[in-house]
Amino acid sequence: MNCREARELIHAACDGEIDVRQQDQLVQHLDSCRQCFAYEKAMGCLKGRIRAVAVTADLSAADAVLTRFLESPATAAPTGPILPGFFLRPGFLRTVAALAFFTAAIFVGISLLAPGTSLAGMVIEQHRMRLVGQLLLDTTADCCQDLEEWFQGKTGRPINVPEICYEGTVIEGGTYHKHPTGNEIYLAAYTIDEKPVTLCVCTGPNMNVGKGTTFVSNGISATMMHEEDFTLISWQAGMNVIALVTPFDEAKSKDIFASIK
Image 1 (cartoon, rainbow, N blue to C red):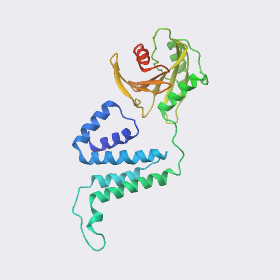
Image 2: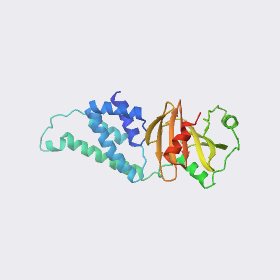
Image 3: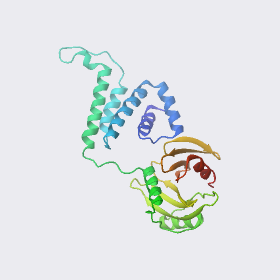
Image 4: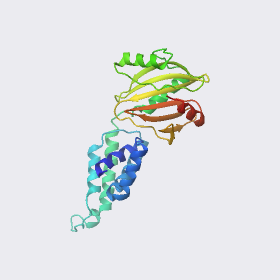
C-alpha cells in the first residue's frame, strides 16, 4: 500500500466506511509510515469536530494544504528579523495548517444543507417504517423467484435476492428504491413470528459493509450492529452489499442469517 492509497482509507475510516481487511492493511502501513500516522491523527480530530456541527463540504483545497505540510521533510528554520525561527518549526506549521483546514470546513459548510441520510440509514429507516406499517410494498410476490422477476422487469437488470429459510418465514413482497448517491436498494419484506424482517440487496458505487462486530457464519464474514429496536447484519456478496434487519436480539438474528440461501 502506498501513501496515496493510505490517505484514501484514512478518509474512509473517519466516515466509518472501511471494512476489516482494509483496516488491517491501513494499520500495517501506519506502523511503518510516520507521515501517514501523523496525517491519520490530524484527520481523525478534525473530522470529528466537523461532524459535531453537522457540516459536509468539499475540502479538497484545504486538505491539500494540510497534506503538503505533513509530507514536507523537517528542515532547519531560518531566522531573521521578519519571521523568527519559532514560527517556522514543523509543529507550528502543522498547527497552522490544521487550523486553516478546520476554518475552511466551517466557512464552506455554513452555506450547505445538512447531509442526507446514508445508505445504511435508509435501510434502517425503511425497516422502521415496516415496524409501524407505513411502508407500502410495490409488489405482493410470495416467493423469491417472483420478486426477482419483478425487480428485473422494473430495472431491466437481473437481481439475486437471497432467500431466508428460517422456520415459519413468510415473504410478503418487495420494493425498489434508488438512493440520491446512485446506489440502489432492492428490499424483500419477510415476516417471522408475526414481526417484520427486512432484507435489502444494495448495489452501486461506494458500497461498504456497515460498522459493528464482525463474525463468520457458513463461511461468510458479516458485520452485526444491535440497537434497541433492531439488529442489522450486513455482508459483501460480489459487487453488492446485503443487509438483514430484524426486530430480534443478536442470537436469533444470527440464526436467521445462518438460514439464508
